[in-house]
Amino acid sequence: MNSIYRTRLSLISNARDHQCPDAWEELLEQYRPYVASIVNSMKVPPSHREDAIQQVFVELWKSINRYKPVEKGKFRHWLATVTRYQVIDFIRYHASRQKTQQDFKEQALIDGEQHQVPADIDALIEEEWCRFITRKALSRIKDNFSPMALTAFKELSKGKTPQEIAQCHAIKVDSVYKYSARIKKRMKTEVEILTRQLDF
Image (tube, rainbow, N blue to C red):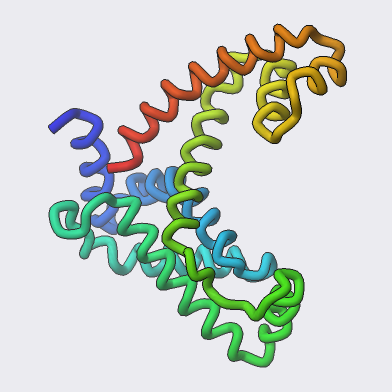
């Protein structure tokens, strides 16, 4: 068993001990963006998303003692399952209440459909994990690159052509390719590190 895996399991073990607030705070810091991204993907109205996230972590606080790696598998899979069912309960409860019903109806109009949990939620959750890891990796490496390099990389990722980026920012097309290659290489390494640390 490698040291990173032992460290992560130790964090979970310490978080189970409600007398160890530092471990719990670290767990929240590490995984809150992931939970938030799942809540967003399940189309909870913006005005209620923070409440939904809090409901997930209240349940996590109550049930983390039941998490056993051998039986439950990876922690992030178990966390995603807890999140999914808590959000489903949250949606059903609030959609039936007169006070908040209008918010959910308005969200349904925005989405162009009746508010419901997406049928492909498992695939969406997996996509959110990939986005979560990618965003976290970029956040950790961004100080190693110039603002121009990061801008070019982000615009290229959003579908702009190297020629469009070069013209917009008055740089060489070759520079766009070099910026992108350097950041991708560093991103790949950082994603691998984060996956070992968080996907256990």
